[in-house]
Length: 481
Image (cartoon, rainbow, N blue to C red; front, side, top):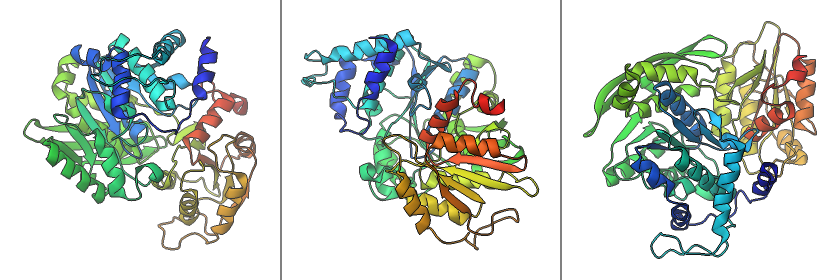
């Protein structure tokens, strides 16, 4: 099979079908040569990241920090925006196509019935029935086992406890990002229940870094850490701070005191984040705290203070689709659930509108998200003069008729209790529903004037669609010219 045929074949694998059990997934990994054991014996540090919002950003920040120190870094993430190989990175570069093909062939070889080396666990007769995520995870582990990076950062797909990545035996640290209400049909209907699923990545002898909020989640993490007798490092809001100095930049400072039976010390970081997204402050803080657990290794490899290296890595990090200004005054953001939209709106508030100008939003979402809640948050914010809602033209997208129903049902004006500046929309914005995201985006950018700001948000799939339409390497080039 050619590379293109393989990509098409993988695309046909169900994304949300029933996962295999962790022992079964472990059996597949053992049958592939237990690459995680190979990595561990070779000295690779494996960092596991879970959470509702911010996982990808934390993974990216960590990767850049360790790269700044001189380590070779593997990064397994999801979803991808344009190219499926974005999910498997080594030192910031995607897996080469020929190596992607070879990894695919090794995983598909498991379709031959046999017993693996995982005790009495026999591999199912039809292991081709992997989920989309399981298949790509196994491919990635095969590749990383060959490449042997110094550090491997693994992002969970869905949840944590039953996630395919959680079958990895050896981890050096774990991070859990902000917990919110998402994927409730799989993870539970309360913050505590969802936190319990995410806490499944917590293991004996593996330090864990978490946020102080929401409080219900923190209590779950505290209880699990106490039961496992592992160090729990809590990042508090008081530990970090920043302010905008110009569009696309945040002055960032982080001061953290480690105090546990296995690790003590103080970490000070001062740097500039290359982003307009205020929510990245907490993601950068989680990343800095996690990297600080490897202070000695960072100092020995780089020959410089860990705080300096961490600051350099944070400043170099760039994560597409997170309040990314892809044209002057045109931003895209992948906020895809109520908490993500609230964080997006908070960042929008920090970007001043030119005198006499206005804000316009292109919005879409996946059908299985809390779209009504997201629409309500957007309308109550009073930030936008015009909203164009669109279906994305993919299987998971919300339908046009549902968008009409949702936005017609949200009839209230801007919330008078909101902290709105004078340039915010005072009345209900003009709302319309278009047919196609890419066409609507082209129209909005073509008609844009200099005192107008355009935002596209609601789903990472939306960001990916806009990227694919124009091409990430020369993104939106036809609009520029």
